[in-house]
Image (cartoon, rainbow, N blue to C red; front, top):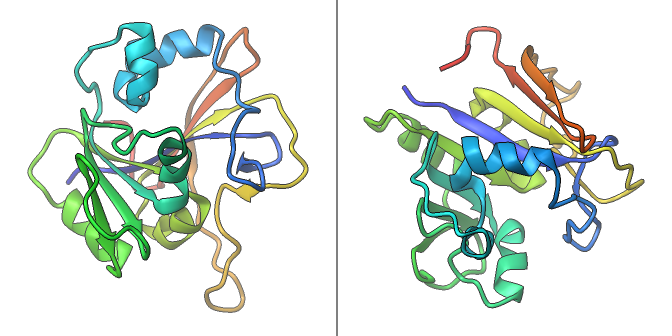
Length: 200
């Protein structure tokens, strides 16, 4: 079965975006970007791929799942399909119809969708690219956290996971460290997996 991987940029204090949903705090230059271009080019949005002249095929993911808030910055600059080289699913209560290659999933349980995607016959994994609220709903379906940790403190913003609204007391989910890599840019890639998981 393929894996659900939460691959995301995050600050030192655990935020994936500013309170207004923007993410200007995450540096777009440096040796960490070179690693992304080489190893996970499919995770770069179409306007970045175009600007950098990237046409490489997907290396790990063939499907991306996101919430409406994650799609919104692309919509704000006129991009309705940020990852046309992948199958795109947007879990939303407000998107009325498909936009380009983006398929909105309205009123569907995200857990059911992700379980269907993971059960597909494919060598590629499923990328959860945000946001925090959706990640909070899908934490028990995650096989790996791939965190791009930036040397920035925001103080407030949108958290890596939405506040726990489930059972009391909160349930601790444990992940094990798989690998970390430090870049001269100050960014650190950290991969964590379920105790019963492991590297593909």
